[in-house]
Length: 237
Image 1: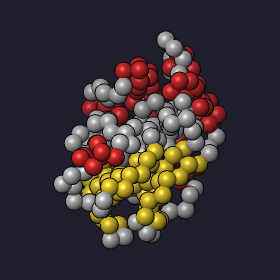
Image 2 (image 1 turned 90 degrees about the horizontal axis):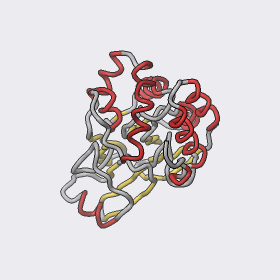
Image 3 (image 1 turned 120 degrees about the horizontal axis):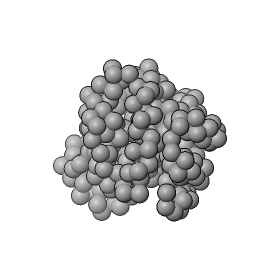
């Protein structure tokens, strides 16, 4: 069985459309369908139509419940600048769907036990754990799973910690690791593999421009999309 694992789609439909073309039998989504990007409705509708098993992300919760996303301070204003994009596009039923998503869910595939969550086991919505083996070794202590799938950091990594694998597919819609290609993972018969796919970034930039967000936010988000580098963000607003 071939399973497509995505996270942090952030309303980037051209990126999701490109990755959706990768052959797969099932889809797992680790949250943050919305936020920052111009086409969250298209992304959510494709994920639902694909039958994806989904966990809730902090931006999904923020939109659905009207609470702060609690992202890093230099991204709070970008989240605020794009929040109305999702509010205009999503129906009440779609917003309710995001609200009802669990922050953590367990699934069984190919004889393996999988835990899906957006951030970290102790804090599934907001905890931030990068590719630190020792921190993750402590974090997964007591978890009954073969594979823990996480997102949130926008950094792609795969850690083998004894009997548990921790996989972050990276951000499909807003990479921050210096590689602007859409990041995702494939589980092939339960074995994880990290992947990247090129996509038409300028289509996303054009859709952002058409969304009517503030010029400073448009400049910052477009720079990040084109480079995948945090240091490409303009200083100030």
